[in-house]
Amino acid sequence: INMLQMLRSALSEQHLELYYQPFIRLHDREVVGAECLLRWRTPDGQFIAPDVFIPIAEQSGLMIAIGEWVLRTALNWRAAMNGRVAPDFRVAVNISHAQFAEPSFVGNLLRILREAGVPGYQLELELTESVAIENFERLKAKLEQIQAEGIEIAMDDFGTGYSSLSVLQRLHLNRLKIDRSFVSGEESSGSFSMVETIIAMADHLQLKTIAEGIETESQCAALLASGCQDGQGYLFARPMSEADFSSWLEARA
Ligand code: G
Ligand code: G
Ligand code: NA
Ligand code: MN
Image 1: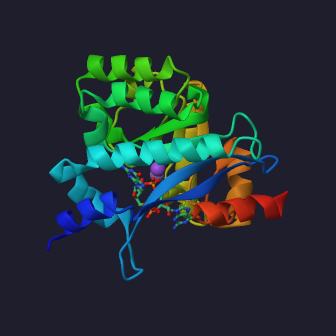
Image 2 (image 1 turned 135 degrees about the vertical axis):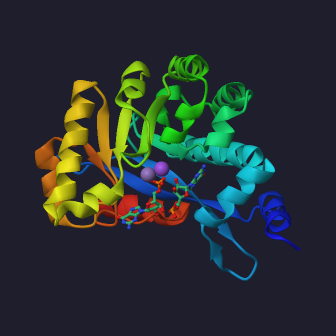
């Protein structure tokens, strides 16, 4: 039995799970959202990392079904969090390139949003620079259709891909996610200057910023001083199961 068959049954037998990692507003440390991260728990209790199975899901076309499951689960979770988080608390969902490129993507997205009863502004999509290989006009039209619902678009792992400044300028995005490789380079000051460059560029393009992989108070302080708005990382919390996320929230209150 191969990995693809196992993954297919994991989806149907509900062995996939979402973990949630909070987004923190750096200046006052309020919880402003969470990214959902897919986990596959095999029957023997082992976790298989998404880096391992997402490429297989993408090649086989199974990512479409998994991606819809992720969206539905994340949005139902967001609806269930009402009253425990601020109204503008956003849930961020990673969208793979194969999923985004599917012609039915936007239609399915909006249908799932409606079924969950969640307003668009409570959802953010994390895309990577790889979406920019798509035909530019088509990409732009898709993004506009999504944003017309209030859904925000973040560019994930920013700075590691190849998208040009001109693409960034011509697409209307909402947020840049500064890749953690730049954040962890803080001690060797060469790469932290990349963080400052990215934030300056984001400000110029009127994009919001979030830094990933914040592990130390000194990284947090440096990001705050550079004008970065939000952050995520082990300093605040690891990705947590739904139950652990709820306990974590309660413990802070
Ligand atoms: O926690 P971490 O190991 O979860 O995530 C590893 C990688 O898997 C990250 O690049 C992340 O963007 C990706 N990933 C996690 N969950 C999802 C998901 O639901 N969909 C997609 N497309 N990628 C995901
Ligand atoms: O590619 P993407 O940015 O979606 O993936 C986020 C990845 O970063 C996940 O695998 C998540 O578990 C991981 N992550 C989150 N916070 C930290 C952190 O503080 N340090 C490290 N090393 N990894 C982190
Ligand atoms: Na992400
Ligand atoms: Mn990222």
